[in-house]
Image (cartoon, rainbow, N blue to C red; front, side):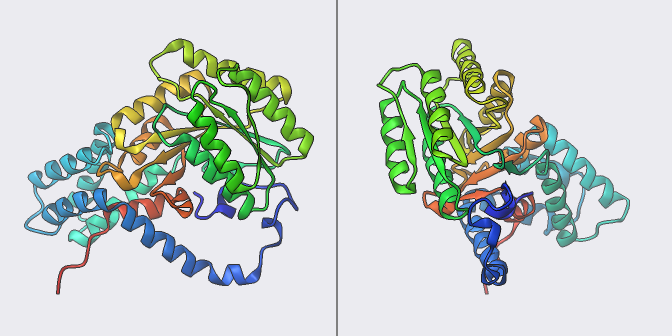
Length: 341
C-alpha cells in the first residue's frame, strides 16, 4: 500500500518533478513519515479513544475468557468494522490465543493490528497516471467532500509531483460545486473547464478531456454530480458520462474514485456497493475520518467490497488528504494513550 504521494502514483518515466527526486528528500523521509503518523493518530482521536478504552478493558485487564471476545466484537462493531469482518478477525485472534501462540494484552493487541491491516490491504492501492493524459473520474453523493477532495488532489499532483492538471466541472446541477472547484483551480494553478449552469454533464466531461489533450495535460480530473445512490436514473447518467469520456479518449476514464463520508458508517459501505454496480470503481477516498468514532469503516469497505481505499481525508488542511496506508491506519486506530504518570 502507498505511504506517500510518490508511492501512490505511478508516473510516466521523466514526467513531472518526481522523476528526479532530491536526495535530501530521501534523507528527510523517515521524519516526515513520523509526522504524518502523529497527525493521523491525532486526527483519528474519536475512533482511537473509543476503541482504546475498550481494548484496555478487554485485553489488558483481567483474564481472557469468552466474555473478552464478546466485548472485543462489540467494540469493533461499534467502530463500524462490520459484523462479518469483526467475526472473522476475532475468531482468528481467539483461535491463535487458545492455541497458545499469543499471551498477554500486548501480543493480542499487536496481532489484532496486523489482522485489521491485512484486511484493509486489498487490490491495487496505487493510481496509474502514466497514460498521458490520465483521466480520473470522481463520483460520490452530495456532502461527502468530493469537490474539496478533487481540489486537494489537483494541488498535490501539481505541487508535489509536478504534473499538469486540468479539472472538469461536470457537477452542473449544483452551481456551488462549480464555484468551489473554480476556487480550487486557482489555488492549484490549473485550468478549469466548465459549462453553463444546468448544462449536460457529459458534454462538460467531453470538453474537459478534449481541452486537457490540447494543453498536453498529464492528468484530467472530472467532477460529477453528487448522486443519490438510490436513484437509478442518476446512476445511469454516471455510466453515460463514462461512455462519453471514452469517445473522446479510448480506454478513459483510467481511474474512477468514489468519495465516501466515513461519518455515515455502514451507509458508506452500501454506497460503495451500489456505485460499483453502476460504474467500475477502482478506489475509495474515505473522507472526514477526524469527525467520527467509526473509522473502522475503512476496513469494512476494503474487506467486504474488495475495493482498495486509496486516499483518506483526516482534516481540513491540504496535508490532511493522505495516501492510505493499511499498517499506519490500523496502528493509529488501535494505539493506546500512555498511562498518566
